Image 1 (cartoon, helix red, strand yellow):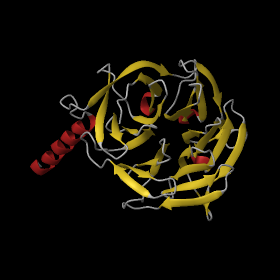
Image 2 (image 1 turned 90 degrees about the vertical axis):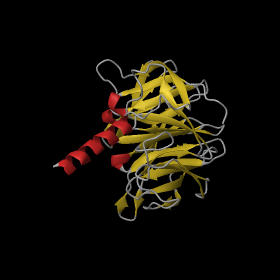
Image 3 (image 1 turned 90 degrees about the horizontal axis):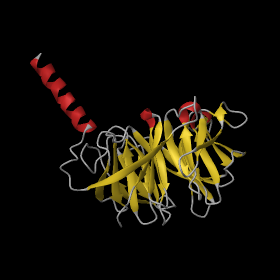
Image 4 (image 1 turned 45 degrees about the horizontal axis):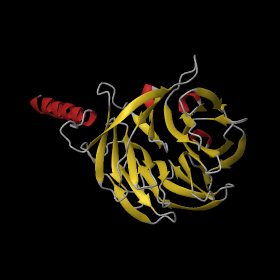
Length: 313
């Protein structure tokens, strides 16, 4: 009985540390000022938003997974319109998770349960349907990113533990990874981000790390490792890399967002200007050119927008 009680107390202590990391005593903190939240139209709120991208005008496109749609907002947070609906035909989606955008304004959506990537114009016209298969097996995509020159799509596969590369028009090129814990391998890769040099950052969820690759799949560096202290991850979910070499990573279990250099050095833990608010299950992240940070908070059913002044890398 005493042994059981000791184990139970240890579990409670670990959970407490994981949920509320000791941040106040850490000097490496950076404050994000909350501005407003993105929410759905009256009677149709966001449900489990998982990812967000911005176009050149500052409009936000949110993967509203619980509603099987893309929710579109103005640069000031006003609801505009939606793209898609539940299903497979006629712009249908089933469990979309990630989203990417090309420089010329095409949205690519990882339509997970339909095992495909969809391409839309910014006003919602479906122009591409890219099925994802490996032999006779369907691949469930989690996220998609577009190369800087717009010629390639990088897609993370949930059930094949790989990063796949396709041409812009949907032709298969290559893939790397495979299930494992070694450098270059994955256990459920998720969100993607590209920096200004073309390097690719991949959230490797169950390996509790972010891996950085060159565009041709060469492993470069690992960011983070398992743990509950600043610089560690428990359930990393989102990543956003800037052109200047700053990398933000969200952790949905620790309710934390951390800032790293592109060579994997921990730099800051993000705090909000309202200590009572914090981050709630943060996942997808997006950074605007005007210093705005968009954070998908899945279980809070909102996308929070902050002003964030990132220091040089």
